[in-house]
Length: 560
Image (cartoon, rainbow, N blue to C red):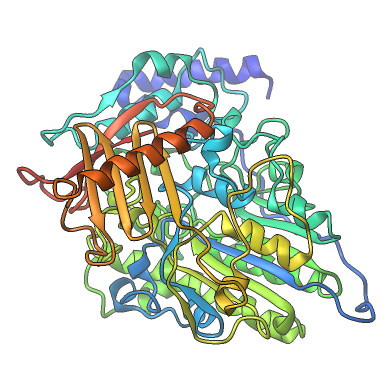
């Protein structure tokens, strides 16, 4: 359809619906109504490697599996499991390799965290500080007609409007804001896929990207030979009315309302047209991962399997939901069923590696891009830690983090010193024999020698996180949270107080001063944000969204 025809149709739709619906309702649904159509399911023809295995040894295959907003308490190896449901296949990665008990996300929201693991660097080194706010803005949609990202950010800002702490929305920044597709990881960054491709690896991306879709930013332009997934930050798992799906909507959350109204159920292959998967999204990505393993069984490959579960919208496969009758709370049951599907997928990937004779020569890493989100309204997902996604309390940044490499990492290892997502880059590069770039600062290190004891010391004495004026540093066992609204410094001794219950800043002024100096020095090495923050929204640390606000409760203001 021509652009002018789409605009005409959109105008007619808006005018007609406006007679019977509110202006806000139209705004909420407009992007979804005007999005291009989605094609029927398509077969994927993965590029086939050699028909026979080459003689001699070859470097290990590397599979990086990322969950989305998975809390540390959602995995039975690192917590109780969501609703008490075990995750035996994810657990097996740690039980047969190493569990990093202080594994940290590169940031506390999806996109900056993924930018860190893809580049081995603090994402703030190249300006990737804030998550693009729009989940579904078509490329052809004229920004002058309606600013979806503007409205989306405003809705986020009002999610805590009943609290005594008010959100701050920057109208001027919203008007200056670029299209979300142009907010991404610059082409000048050298990704882990490019690193491994330089050593002859075939590289595959599956699932969520969320690192931009303008020229040079897409996965197939950032080192991936093949890409099947979606560029935006979220996607439906099945159509809302599919007979095989069970949905849970959080009416207290404006973000959730927007996602249900606008997210499609679609993927792209190598930048082609959008088409519908032929099954539940998590299972679809698993099936395609198995096909990718079979296609590449006779050559080294790197697979980035980026599940979008259990990120909202909360949608479970009915068979998974029905398998958990012991969970009485509907929302928790849907959420746990989503994690059950991820765990099943991990198990099927590991079984396929074994069937192809590849499991002993494959490095598998598993993690989540952030801690669990407050906006799903479930209180237990990050226990015992305080905080949520979009905060730098431990609940927002401490994530499940495991690695399995038979013959290199002893089974059942537990490693306590802090590591970060950006260590994935250096670890994978070392496994593949790819030298690290020398023309830029690489913050990650190869963690394998530390885990095995071949290298003394710890990978990182100091780790940093930043989102706008909210900055945090962990130095040894000290952790300083420098808040801007209200201006306050919180100091925690993680050795004595790992769940950040007691602020000891007043009794340790010298340590506060020293850590503030470290934050200042680190900030001096970072770039300004590549795009502006549209809002600063308050997030209650000790209760999820939807729970009643409490007088005097702890908040942080999150810039995005």
